Length: 354
Image (cartoon, rainbow, N blue to C red; front, side, top):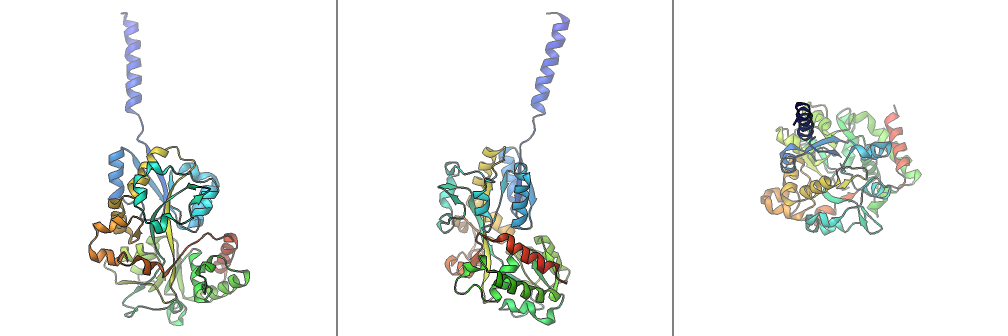
């Protein structure tokens, strides 16, 4: 073997070995709600699959849809749409139909959730139910020793500059409840007429003097309470959980008018180039052990009822798993809003009003 040939072979070996050493760790990109990619449970998936999970968080359902429709669907592998936009995403080609054979734990999920038509299109299933819960009233117990029992308290002139509402259509739904538009059919909250929406707008503009700030992320509302800028708000159980962990005197209640709520699904985007890894992530996230860890972080109710076996009786009671049917009757789960553009127009007019 000539010296020249030997050098060529050595150079080729270096290129081959160098290429294998430089092989990138696969990354799974998520666009999800806060709390759905916490290291306390995601790290185990990363270690088992030799990958990295990179999460971006959304503030509203509309933000998620806008990003996907804006050409970003290929930037994300997994999304967690709530029940108000899950159908739109499933029918618009933004998510991939699922092969349930790759998700053996799917059969354990609550039939109350998997039987819904939210993510079913022409016989295909586009998402797995993951977590669900209400949009409760959160309050500072030092300001309210007795839990407030009505959303109307938000309009109390004594609370000028001391409340917060979510910068989201959920606040429109809440005002519609105060006006009684959920009677006799709670589903009507998601199909209001122009006259009803104008009445909601007027009601919310009357609320603005009491609003210290409209929150857009869970951490933002938690900080508003901790800094004593607000004493009451509509929020998520996640914030109640965060405040309790920080030893803040937070209370949580569902007022007598009841409240809206959501069922979050996990979906694989149609543009994902990591679909097999994404399937493994979905399977991991709906397993009872993971579901228990997610509830520890978020305070949300798991879609897999078997997670309850891993909880203390107190934890089960705190998540209302001891009487799911009665609890769900107090939550009007978000539905697809056919006139979403009109709802957003009304909400933007509320925010722009002086």
